[in-house]
Image 1 (tube, rainbow, N blue to C red):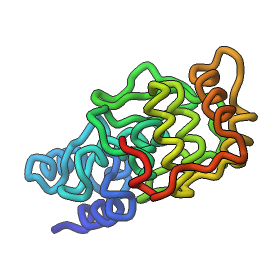
Image 2 (cartoon, rainbow, N blue to C red):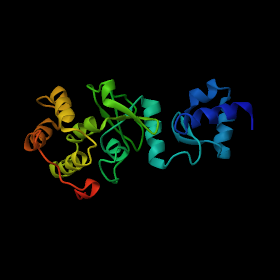
Image 3 (cartoon, rainbow, N blue to C red):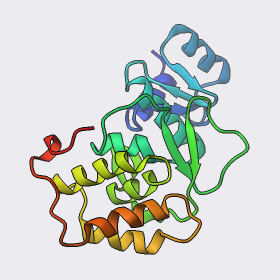
Image 4 (spheres, rainbow, N blue to C red):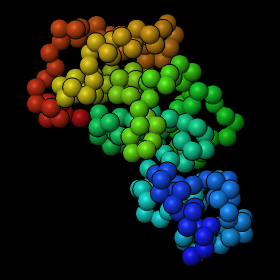
Amino acid sequence: MGEAIRHVIEHARQNGGTVTHGEAIALGMSKSTLRRRVAEGVLIDISRGVLAIPGAVDETGLELWAACSKLNAVVSHQSAAHLHGLDRPRFVKPTVSVPVRRSKDLVGVTVHQLTDLDPDHIVELDGLPVTSPERTIIDLAAVLRDGHLARILDNALAEKRVGFDVLESLFASLGRRGKPGTALMRKLLEARGSEFVPPDGGSNAVSF
């Protein structure tokens, strides 16, 4: 194995199993060699401009890595809820958010625009930038039915994955008239209040 491909694989291992075409070329691989390594199965072409080491992560993880790398995106909404253990996996496309929508998104990935996403709202999980549990729940209010979101919220409070005061404070800074999900999130928070006692029993407290 050549020196260049060793550098590329090492770089990919340090970055969740993925590497962009530009990074591979900067590490010394020519375009023709890159195409040959993909044909040989040494690297997998997972999207236009992004490669991965075979078996590095599952298919959904690869798509999230590709989206974050190519779009400078953050894992959000349903995908963030899954990574945080707030919700069970469902048959939804990998979901990320960007501050500015681009003309070309990735096939198979849902891309939202969040213009109010602050660095403090982002944490790192498995090397991926992911919206915090509190921010994730607030964002989910724009895409989930009220019953589903209520169960996620109650379970998160019961398991102490989120704090009510932190969630309420964050919502106060983000909620505004006309923003999708604001009315639903406000209703759920007002129905609970700071004295709300969530169901006991951790993950068994609420059935999804």
